[in-house]
Length: 219
Ligand SMILES: [Fe+2]
Ligand SMILES: [Fe+2]
Image (tube, rainbow, N blue to C red; front, side):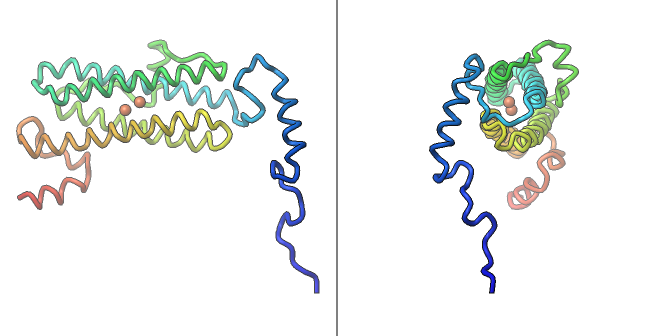
């Protein structure tokens, strides 16, 4: 009776220990070529133009978020809410840092960063919302963060293991956007619950079911 073999059994695995010396030789030969490319090696497997395009769309989202947070921080002085104003300033500064990181990565990939107002208006997946009161501003910021989280998750999946460096940048940025979104959602609840003045009770539509049981338990 013929013995059933596992797929690939007995064959050397690419990159495995069996062909390690020849792989090391190939890596050395490739590293010696195109030295001007710096960190860009044949290990990069993604479609570079597609990744630059996604980076630029994310960059315009970061600039839009930065401007929106800065606008809200400025307007908060009239709203007498220094606690939220401080958070808006902090978020704005972090969006600015994200924009710097994305600029650097676009440059590394040989692209041109979309920093002009026209490009920001055309490419950003997030639209600038001024907001007309405290609650409205918080909601606009939270919606923008939630949009960014979805877009960046899509970019992480597109990068996969073909562009590890860009993927890691977006994974790290995503963690910060998650913090931003959670902070804003908790502000929407806290301010309503503690003061009952700055924000009316309609915020459940934004933070969903989370607020309802808490409100019920507190009553
Ligand atoms: Fe950001
Ligand atoms: Fe953010």
